[in-house]
Length: 91
Image (cartoon, rainbow, N blue to C red; front, top):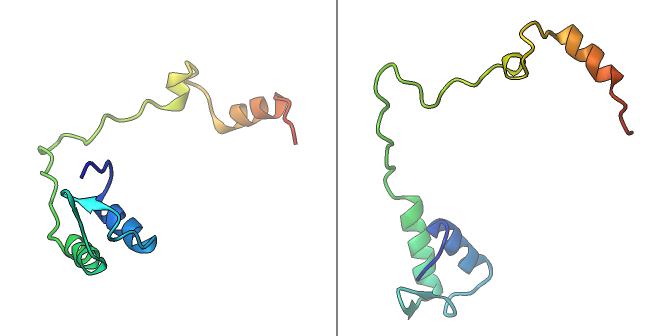
């Protein structure tokens, strides 16, 4: 079976639309009971923990502040609000 997605999602889809006996899994047609049992096995499978990050290293780099990214280091709320009010908006 060449399914691009979650196997739990496939089981739920087959059971919801009652497609057991029409969808092949590993080249064989499976019964409703098999699909229900497979779904239960997948849900109750032990969790796989992600490896811990090395100490002191962030998961991803810190985002660049908006005012720095826009080249306006003194940008504050009042200035941004004033500029926003000058932009014509459609209602």
